Length: 395
Image 1 (cartoon, rainbow, N blue to C red):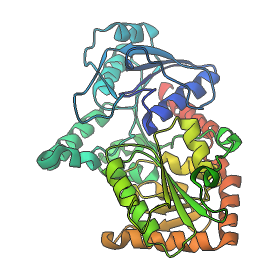
Image 2 (image 1 turned 180 degrees about the vertical axis):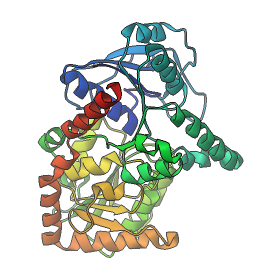
Image 3 (image 1 turned 90 degrees about the horizontal axis):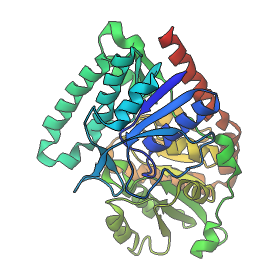
Image 4 (image 1 turned 120 degrees about the vertical axis):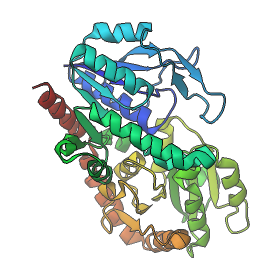
């Protein structure tokens, strides 16, 4: 098949979306499909760096791009919304049989234009709960959310298939579609290179941080921003009654200074280590050196880091939220903590962390089951599902 993937952000900027698109492009290329990625050009002198996904590097058609003056992370490039660029000419000449958009906005509209010109089915993966980022709009959050919902409904109408990375999100989308269109929604999570994750050499976090040999280390991985709720993880460790508990936080973002100030308080001093942003293979090797994984975000479409952590053999303690129960099996390879009431959320997470960290046998059993059953996250399995969807649409 000739498959065009259109994305609003690309490597080397690191996010769940950029990792997902890279993994999909490489896996499809490894199966003999011709793949072209339409994406905003990275900053001058930068190239997409491998992040550990297997398969050949994809071919890119680079859209002109720019860095927003404020509100966007460094390295996040916005595509210029022009349909007559060289990249669009290259994409048109590619003559795709499938066009797969990973954003509904600039590149989504360009993808829709390309799909119509090529008479190819348009597939859309819904990676982001856009309404959950309304706090960045201040007083415009309410109108912004309503406008985004209306826009999404119009974009979905042009799609032959909508891919949701979790059953929760699929149910939400189906509930907002007319009955006759609900069959267009398919649950296909982003896959993980399980073998690659399990082959990583875990970092010796105790030696690096000077922590005692009997420390039980909790890892957290992700962007440090309000919508990811990293403060809940910090507070849970502070409230835990398990003195062996230590925390490593992998990632960076706008909340980092606030989190560092909190971590310097007497109840957490010397028990928390920040690594900052790391290349993805190093980030995964870092969390693989921990004993538990903590996850507090309630704004995910899937929570890819949960699948990665479980694949590495880390039992997960996760606050219940979208996509969490697709990954964490409560009582089997982790603990799912009730989301409400919100005011006691960190304390409930603290209780779960204390219970699992203080029971070495229980923790070891969860770790073994997480690692043994990680094939359920397999990238090959997910690409099988994508290929099947593509072929059904073409047929």
